[in-house]
Image (tube, rainbow over the protein chains, first blue to last red):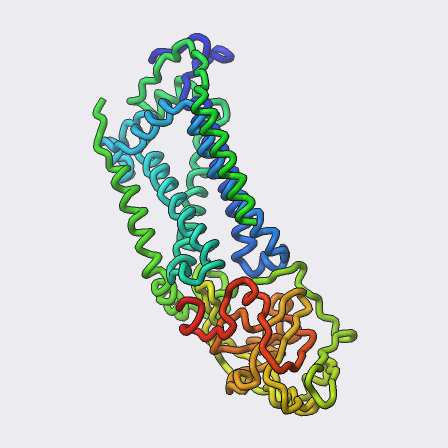
Length: 237
Length: 225
């Protein structure tokens, strides 16, 4: 396996697994999900509602987090390394024969993402979209009775249960697999970890990373996204 | 390296599609699921993360506290004799019992809630509303929540001012010590933590009506249903 000498730390060769853009997306998503889950539980579970009886505050936190989450995601996509995100998406949405074996819990060689990680990412994305749609409908339904659909609450609830279970599994795997957490905290894993868990992955030699200049159009769009986020905040409160 | 097939993209689209279709059938599915939880003993049912559980809605924290020593219910407005009840005096009025469903306008409901409390004719017997009276305005200790119901609506056989829920004194988050129970209407008409009842000659818009909800909140016949 080719290892960039610059990534050798304390005598152990390391390879780049996630770039800064990917890690920022992960941090934003993880933080927002935790806040949304906690404030959501305070709105949803009677025993918590007794302890945290400030429903309007919990609701405001829930809505603000949702707006902040979407705004921050849009900004990272806009200003970050979009080529890296595109290639990550392409890797995640394609399942080869080994990935399908992996999902069936057989031994299989994995690329940068194994079959389980791919399935997890796909479900996270789908459930996130369903959360946004059902959440917006819940919010609108409070204002316009025509938009109160019979299944909105059920969809938001079911998505919560599914995503909480999925995320618990994700965190369990991350904590129980030695060396995997560094991929998301530092962006790198040891070459030994890569060879052991991602046999088919050929980490590219990090080319001398040129700083990608941010185009003026991107800055203008980013300002627009921020303004839209601010408008959404004003609207939900 | 074999690139594989875009199964992930198809799974994403399929999953989102099924999820969106549940906007139509999700309510019925939740009802069905809740029915099936009746197979579970009642004591364990509340531990289930789905099904027909209460959700506690409130508008101005913290939930009002009930102190039996100082608590009073005032009934005034268009009455011959304004009244002030202590909790013990309310308990001394004729107590009615009923089992009815509680339905929230946002889509959840709780079946077979056992209520005990005072029918409104009994409650108003000593105050004696004037001939011009047509409605009651219920004012919550949780300001600014209030809502009104007409005297005709309150004569429904299952309308009451409840002191007990499921064989125990009303819990704090359910509106202790007394709340309005109006099973034929959505839950927002059932004012919790009632501290004052004003007899009026017209129905005034309550907390949620000022925010776009229907005044007459008949289940299945209002609020876009």
